[in-house]
Image (cartoon, rainbow, N blue to C red):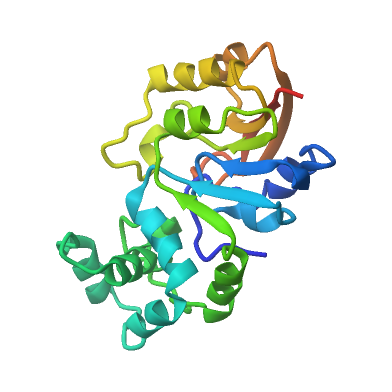
Length: 249
C-alpha cells in the first residue's frame, strides 16, 4: 500500500529491494523504523506483531498520529481548503504554534502535497487531490497497532537494543542532509559516525539504506553491502542515484 505523502529521499521506488532483503521470518521480530519519514517501507512490508514508527520531526509525527487517531477530523479540516498558491503561501508563513494538533497536521499535509517535489518550499501548480481519503483510510487502518514515537535516533536505538528486534534505518544521506526537513536537528558528519558506532553494538538485526559514496562505504566496510540504483528525485541533472543497502546479517 502507499503512504499518504511523498517525501524527500522516500523509498517508494526502492522499498521492494529493501524488503526482499529482510530476514525470511521478519514478521516474528519487533520491527522498528528509526527514521520513519513517509513510511514507504512500513506500509509495503507484511504486518509484524509489534511495530514502531519513529521520527525526530515533530510535525511529521503529529501528522501520522492524527491520521491514526483522528482521520475524520483531518478530513473535515480539508473540507473547504482550495488547491491555490494563496492558501499555500498563507500556510507556509502562518504561526502554527497555537494551532490544534488537527490543524497542524492539515497544514503540514497540505504543504507537502501542494508543493513542488514535496519539498514544501514553493507551490507545485498542479491539478491534484490534496486529500486522498482512500489512501488516508488505508493508512489509518494500517497504523491501528503501530506505536508512533518522536525520539532521536540514539534514544530509539538504545531503547530497542535487543536480540528480537529488526531495525530499518533510512537516515539523511551523506552530503545531501540539506534536502531534509530536520529543523534544528541537523544531521552532521559526527551523527553519521555515531549511528555507525551504535549499530556496531546493536544486538538484533538491522538493515540500512544510504547513498553510495566512499565515506559511507568505508564507515560500514565491516557489514554486508549491496549496491542498487533508482531514478533520482533529488537532482534534475543525474538520472540515476546510486544507493547502498547495508545489513548485519
